[in-house]
Length: 69
Image (cartoon, rainbow, N blue to C red):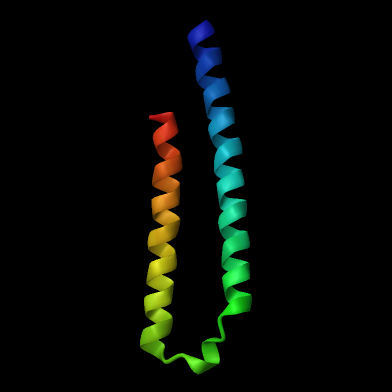
């Protein structure tokens, strides 16, 4: 029973941390959106920026996830 409670507690901690990371990433995305004028960028530049943001998001998530593995 103790191991199950430990698993549940760890999962709750994970969900809390995940939620905090996603909130931080959304804040970063919002701030970048305010700083970047997409009207002055061509399609390739916008796609490159989007790809970089996706890679950054994934890297942050994987780095954070390592704490639970």
